[in-house]
Length: 86
Image (cartoon, rainbow, N blue to C red; front, side, top):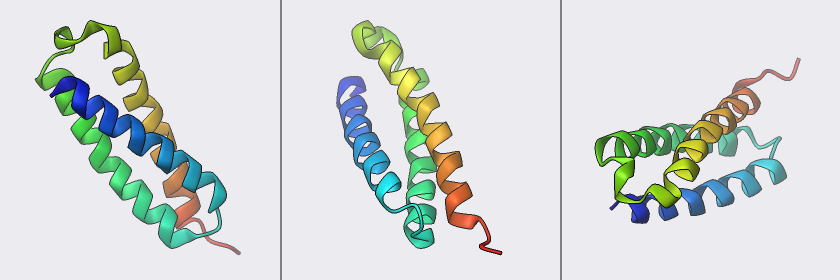
């Protein structure tokens, strides 16, 4: 489960970041991806701490790093999704 969820979240992370940078002015997409990211972050931390990183210590460091970087990406997406164009 640990490795499977890691790869699912890693693929989502790559797709998410690519779409985010090519659609910075699409507020609806930014908001949608930001909220999906919140779910991915919750799932990521739940799996990391719930299942335990001892199941696959080789990717444990990458898993936690991806979770924290995903928080930064979500914050950027919330900014671009909810900013006003005054």
